[in-house]
Length: 536
Image (cartoon, rainbow, N blue to C red; front, side, top):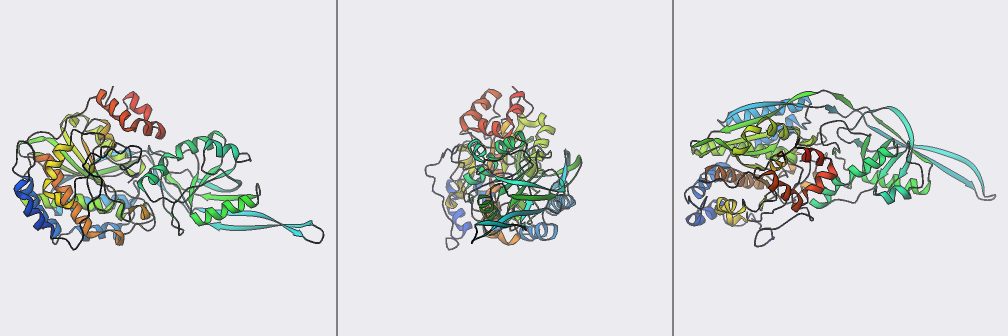
């Protein structure tokens, strides 16, 4: 996941009766029994009260019982590992996805697009030299100036430019990087390495801030001629992780590194104690190549009545590579394949076609899903819904509806068989950050799973994002939710929602604050011109 797409405090609108997140404790009644008890009142649509409870009853034993999903996930994470788009591991992951759909008996193909640049981190080194003055006490006279070199733990920001020559520059602490902080720095920014502070992140809003802050700071740094930026890690215990601040798949404007929090705090203390006399030697021999061809993996169960109308269930297959991409987003890639397997195994056919898509290029700015939208522009009027899972294996209490209220009634009808699980807490926010984004900008109804935080943020993009962090029980429950949602939207009589016009979208992006997000992140001109999203 590039960024958590829901629960941003500025934009959430809770549209359920209560925002309390229901829990399904392991000690509660068996999930299948709860479903069977609620079947008599279940309905998929206002005009067709036939299929969702019966379909859910068929899906649940297939998913909650013995299934290949967990072993499939283990192979993806433990054997293939981290999967950066454009690297050989990503090609292996595509093969994994194709094999998974084929084993499920689902038709599958891949669709190619071009990633502007392939990128790989080199052997990043960050050395700090501090000049410490020793004073002879009896004369209060400076005796000597001693120099010490220390190595700090750091990784390059994704898609950061190479810094292949070992060069030193003065470290300037610019606080949190505001205009006022830059003005207070007290030293020339030109040619300096900037240290930018952070707070420890523990909420979705904190993560949102990690992406919204950098564009303005990078702009100030480039304008003032800085040599590089060091971002203080927002996690403690020396945990390193990788983000990208380039959201178009191109190399960023300035070298940047994320520094282990404890090391960055030590550096800040050294700069404060020795202003103007601490220098950094940053060596980042990152490798780039490209443009390079990449692939999305597309499985399909064709509808029997309206096969040209499509519902998409998707997740991104790529990841960063410090860990093995289990929570972000291997578990949900496995979920999509498992949902396809279970629907196919029921022997039931939906009215509309269901496509199961594993997108690549998500971490570089949703490049793969944007390419899919452009390639399928002629079909957008008949895409009836896009469902995305992209936030780990925490409980799903509902969906983010992309700024729309009109789809909520139909969604509640579909998920009514699972009311006992508390899948009723839907939100009406709209945001960038995962593979629903370009579908949303085209007016297509979107549904993004609102996973609870669980252990997701603690391991987000980090070396600790590994198979053992996945909650296997919750992942299976979430797979039932995903499969039923896809089935219900595909099988109901009437579409769950219309495709919005450009005028309606202009209102939506303003009312949800999505316009300000797009301005901050550099998407606004593309939106205004029609290069991205529904044309004016």
